[in-house]
Amino acid sequence: MVRLDAQALADPGVRAEVVRARDLLAGLGDMDASLYLLFRAIRDHSTVALSGESADEVFGGYLQFFDEEALRADTFPGWEKTLLREATADVLPQSVYDRVKSPYPSTQDPQYAAALQDQAKDLLTRTGHPVFDLVDPGRLRRAAERKAPMNSQADPGAAWNGPLDLALWLDLYQPELDLS
Image (cartoon, rainbow, N blue to C red):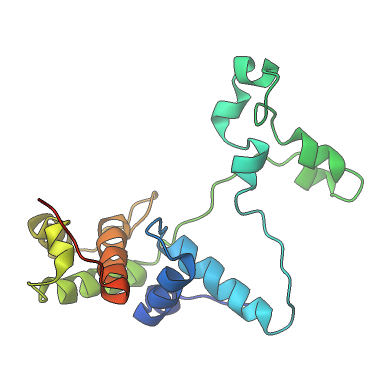
């Protein structure tokens, strides 16, 4: 069993490993960290692991793919996950076969949000950092100075993950920014 806690998900070292592994700025915060940590743990026992990540994009699992016009379209991915469901119907329990899609859960632990809030405050002390050529420090400061960390259903770290990933990416790759 792999157990992930708020401290592991908010660990700056894990963030650095994830940003290096992705090599781009499309981070999803705790979702990236949790998958990275899960697959790292699996790697101790196996060289291959399959997950459902990106299956929605490939097999049309989003609600817009239930639109009648999209379902009748003779294009891919106009089909609902019928291909995948039907291909595995004989090995799936009926409850799994009939299950309605649910979104990937975001971390709701207030300690996760508090850790990111502290990291944002640390970043704000680096006033000459190039991230502030691209990110409004006032907006980040307001988010970082909230009395209680944000904790929304969508993503409790949404205000901090982007700027933290961007700052780390700028530190790692040190690109020359020309904003003229």
